[in-house]
Structures are given as structure tokens and as C-alpha cells.
Image (cartoon, rainbow, N blue to C red; front, side, top):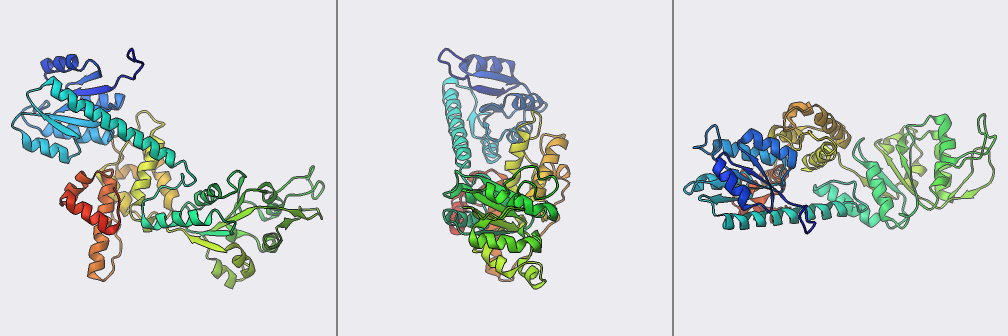
Length: 454
């Protein structure tokens, strides 16, 4: 730290000329200047320091007369730390490569000869932008610590679910969450609790499929001392333990028929009797249920009570599977990678283009849980700077069925392409426009047309 107790900002300088190295280090002594003479050294220093700003000469060895090595270094550095603002340095007549570097994601460019005063202003501005973006990310994370903090989504389907939960949560209506295994039903149940007037009470989950039928009744309703062998003391059940809060009955479709009548009575009367007891105990609790089963089919087969079904489904929310949530797979993958790579010093911090394509193409029959498991494994097993499709054990061989109306095909394809590219380039509109082969105004117009945001 300096005398003002301010953290000294780290500036990475990628330059092979010793004279220019000394000049830059002397000119920017107010920064912690790290010098790298080639691409390999630059990558190593980027991994070690993750600087806010980097100054990159495009003319690097072994081919200092051309920009190919510098452009390759630019792409690798951005994959490692996308947040770093990279200012490329080019020859005074090399405008084409400067523009190409900006298209690849460079923050700005500067043409030689070097004027420390002018370059210093560009660097200071880059650090300022980097600090603002860091602050925005921090604010976004703080916002995500709101009741819907566990939900990561950008698809219209999930955003609609979130708005529904915000409307439903303040009431005490019994809610049924339907969706395939791994779609995040408990996360949404917790969001309902946290947005409700019962947020100060307990959230008590119980998985009706995970507890043997012989124990489930006592788990739900509690038991009196001496009710059965081993009942050495009075014990309250999950329902009573959630008094004043929210009870989450997961996999309600697997609740044994013998307990469905007792649960129905509780939902109607809001009183329980412990196993072995005769006293009616009033319980004030919000009930949220979830299942991946087809309950109407269960009713027809005599496996689920119709009256109980109507009692638990005062409000029904159907959660779409991950394969139907356009753009969410890539978004979730990046969030999960940040979570699991953060605890490992040498873990890769980004995906290869092939991996992103494979993530998008995969069906994700196991939904978010399957995606999370593959990301965890890839973070541990990956050996390169980027997570590849092979690390994820995926191949980009999936395809989606298309509607027959040509206008709808075109519009759906445009939306999917825009979401995909925006996810891949981290929301950078200029880079997305270049990848899509359109101008920035055109891309902004399309995004406005489809209600998409960067």
C-alpha cells in the first residue's frame, strides 16, 4: 500500500523490448508494474496477479514483425481473466490490427511512438472502468442475495416463474411446484418463504421419498414418549417444528396412501396429533409441496387422493426443464464455474468455444443438477487454461426441432442466436455484433424487438 493507504493497482506490461520495458516501468511507478516479455510469460503473470489493466504489444516474439502472436496472446489473456482491460499497442501504421484487436475484446488501442502522458490517461481511464465494473458485479451479487438469490436465469420462461413467485409469496396460499428432478424446486420453495411474511420463521424441508414409510409419520407429526419402542422422550415433528414458518414437502407424490388422509386433515383443520398422543395441537404454517410425478395419473391409478391434490394445488407453478430455457444452460455454467473454480488456485476460469456449443446442444435430462455435477468434475479434471467439451464429457451433437412457419423459424433463430452469442461474449454488444455479422445499431434494434437486454 502507498502512504494514503490505497491499494496499489497492478498493471501488466507485455513487451519484449528491454528499453521500452524500462521506460514504461519508470513512467508508471504509481502502479505495481509487472513485466512479461512473451505470450507464455504474460499468461503466467495473468494467472498469478489477475491485473485490472494490461498493456499488450502486438509485436511479440517469435514473430515480432507481425501481430499474430500478440493477437493470440490477447485471446488467451481474455479467456483467463475476461474482466481485465487490455490496451493493445501497435505500430503507427497498423490500424487494421488495432481494429481487429478491439473486435476480439481489447478495451482500447494505442499507436506508437509512446507518449507516457497520453498513454497514462488511457490507462487511468481503463482502471476507472474496471473499478466501476467490479462495483457493479458486487452490487449484482448483493442484489442476488435477495430472496431469489438462488435463481440464476435469463430465459423468458424462468423470469416469468420469478414474477409469479413474487406475486404468490406474500399470501399463505398452499403452493405446488411441478418439474423434473433437478430443476430447482427447493430453491424456488425457499424463495417463496423468503419473500413471504413468514421469512423470520423457519423453513423446514422434508423429502417424502427419502424416509421409510414406517418412520415418515413420526417425522412429520412427532411422537409422545412411549409411543413405540425407542420413543424415550416426547419429540415434535417437522410440521410442528415449522410453526410460524414454511413447511416444504418435497416429492409429495411419493407420500404413502396411509399418511395422505392424515396430511389432508392437517391441511383442512390446521391441527395435528403426535403419534401415540390424543391432544390436538394447532399449527400455523405455510405449506409448499413439490413433485416430479404426474399426480393426475396417480389419482387415476388410485395412488394419490384427489381431495388432497386439490388441497395442495391452490396455486400450481410448473418449472420448465433446462433444455427448454433458452440461454440458461450457458449462463448457469458460467456461474457454477465461477463458484467452483474460485476455491482452486489453478482451476480454469472459462470455457472453450467448443465447450459452450456442447453445453448449449446437450439435452440436460438431469437438469441443473446434472450441469452442476459436470462442472464440478471438469474443474477438478481439466488440465488446460480452458474447460473443454472433453472435460465436460459432452459432444455438440444436439439439435432442436423447429416450427413450420417460416417467419416464426426466422424470429426464433434470431432470438436463439442473439442469446447464445451474448452469453458467449459476456454481454459485450460490440463483440456480439461482430460475431453475428451485423452492426451494433442493428443488434440493438433486434434486441429491442425481442425484448432482450445485454
